Length: 179
Image (cartoon, rainbow, N blue to C red):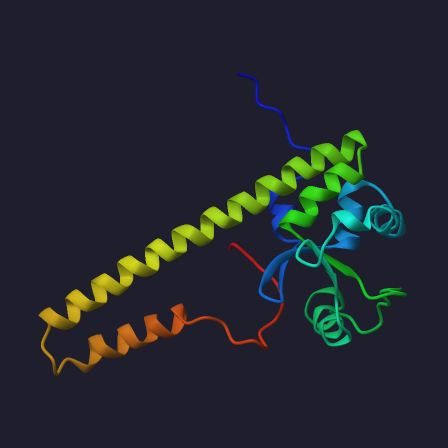
């Protein structure tokens, strides 16, 4: 079977997926660039089909979220201007899928397929991380039960591993990286 080359690399898409409000999302300007349209064109298409985009498919960033997003990812050089007139919209995986029914150009369809693949890949990586965490927990339990109770070195190692597996704090930078 002949393999098709994708129009956009999955890695490029994955680098455009952020965690905001506890959800994996893509920003309107990133989606517009990938689809080959202007951001305002994408947003106009969404507004014309507003009933297809409930709050769990798309939301507009708050001022605080916007400032955090700008400071963390967009502007590393304070001399660069973003030119944002409005707060951007964030699209969840379902919102991105719904965009395929609103934007129907051949490029939009191809890019949307790649975006869906990236979301699925991220979901698989996160699921395998949960499995790994379970194995580590079982290994820790076994080691602590079968080791010398006074061995502080092993306990310190496991404490460090536990800290790495703790859920992130709310004020951590927005974003998601697989590397």
